[in-house]
Image (cartoon, rainbow, N blue to C red; front, side):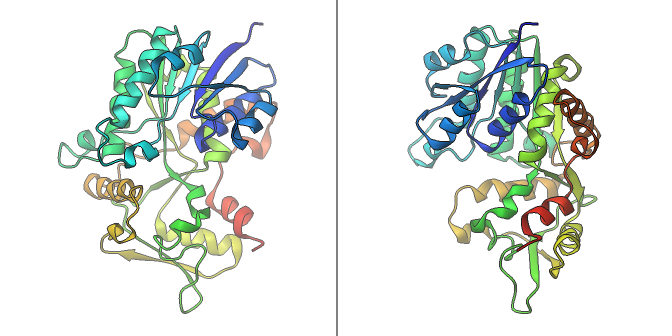
Length: 333
């Protein structure tokens, strides 16, 4: 059987590396893998190369370099970075959508058959035009642009929920009220964020554990999900349940306290604009982060398909729970 080449744009990022790890574990060797990076000499790029991934240099703003990188690819997985340093320049007029169009056009011109893009639902559409959130609307627009290209056999949009891994980032702990790294004065780890909205069904995703498998499953059966937004979800919990899961997994006291609203501008961090917009979207839409009711059944089925393709079974086929994540990362600390 001839293996199909899948090229990953954003290969050294959290999503891209997860996708490559999962695909590389396919026991039938159905796929050969190529990773795109702007710096092939970086430690993360060299690690990919050492694992057997072909690493090539290309820049998302340079269509010619992308054409060369996509050459011969049956499939492409792409994730554009809303927080790319290029957008920090106040004089920069290009947008994430502009970047996405270049990637889509290059993939189409290179003859790619299956284009898988890490997108989201449109905040404008979800809220009936009441609210715009740049990251959500641009990513949605990129996905729609790809679907309307008429060059691909299949276009699938796996969105990603709230990264469980964000609880590991020290810079975010103060934003979350100290949780889960900085105890309050009474010694309790307090998770402080506003309410989510609707049923308080927050979609959490273990990027390292599950996202790559979800995308792997899509590549195994892309025609089943053509044109669809697939919810990248591992565990659906309220914020109260997040604190409860942490306490159960670690034995450390934790509680949730709802903030009436965000005041993230005090941190002076551009990336937090998206977080603020995400909460505004969910408040306005009744918690519909993906534009529709949150569900994990599709992700669970894709995970199971991918895990079977990796020659695994049992608990390996299950989506990661918050309890499992917290126990692994904080249980012995």
